[in-house]
Length: 58
Image (cartoon, rainbow, N blue to C red; front, side):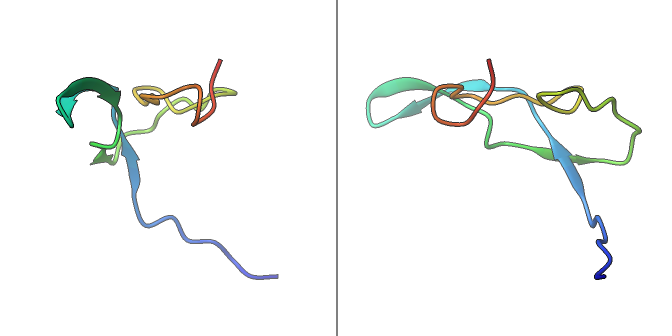
């Protein structure tokens, strides 16, 4: 069985940005962390998705 090595854990919350003359919510801007984070059913503590319709979530 192959082993898995985690190289980086990146988290970030959604932000409002301008895109094609519209304001949209995105969480593409993630930063690496070396903290121990709680992992819930949906995500890591301090992490979120900007578009829950197309990228999961509830």
